[in-house]
Image (cartoon, rainbow, N blue to C red):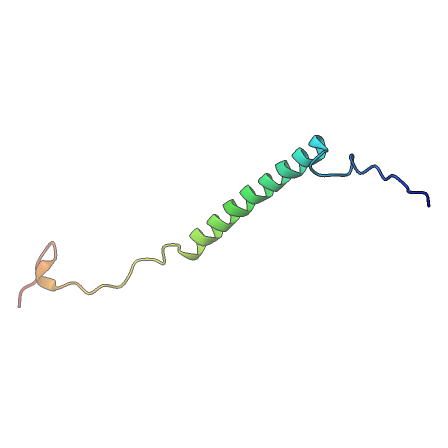
Length: 67
């Protein structure tokens, strides 16, 4: 039997520094962009809804109204 030697050194993620660093760089960019968009979406969901309609006693206003 003849055994074929397969050279996987260039294909291995841990052995090829250029390929692995490029992959990790793009992974970091994707994760940062995902966190930024996720934070923006969360802030958009919890945005200020507007001025609430609150009833104030007439005697506590700037110009009080008494009965």
